[in-house]
Length: 341
Image (cartoon, rainbow, N blue to C red):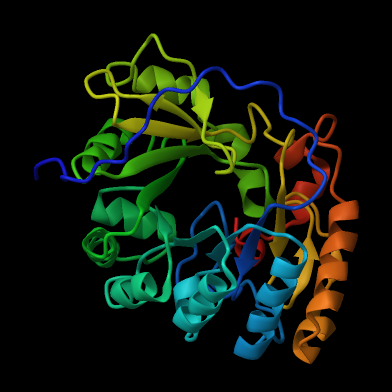
């Protein structure tokens, strides 16, 4: 397949200065449901790991978005579990677009994306990130405990056809499992005008069991991809786009590869992110289970009270200059599935 006509444009920025102190949340990951139709090895212990007793309904999520806007949040990303299991996803996305958030994104396993991509784009979804840990169908099924690669690839095709502003692939790299596929995944993504990103397995929940034997560091990933990457460029971040750091291709500066460390190197300094769980609990950090509940406020439609809960959660955010992120002991007690990664 030839390179897509619409490639993600990128110009190498100057080296980033030290992160400035962040005084308020700018980005929130909204976990619409804790349910998922896959059970990836680094995310869930099994398909029977239990779910929340109850979750916010559509009206509650609309109110939650009102409250996030009231709190000054500028960017939202819808996650799960698997957000495509949430039936009213398009309506919630449309409400976010109506409120005027500057960035509306989605992270999905894409198993159900083929039939929903056009409606999500029409609702106002701007960017989409798709999890893809292998291009081998049998390996993919094993890593996800039963996932069908063909369905995910159909979802990727549908995302491209829907012309989202940006499509990215996320691959969690595991030594001895899929670390021999990095080049193939890069070439697969680049041929479609997609940005591939590789993540270190992190010691969060189930991932804590895998780090000792399966961690592949960003440095090691870069070594595996050295023939494809520009050796003269330094890792650089995208402003307001999370912790990923990117390197351009040797042959075409419009193409690049992203890397997300979380074990060999943390990325807490400058973090402006909060997370809202499916029951309305607002978390200050992926690696902690504390925070503040906005559930009752969301159910009552009280945007001001939701904003107050967001403020209380933000006050509990760890000091990013001293906090060790996903390597903290508290991270082992967090369910990656329940908080949306």
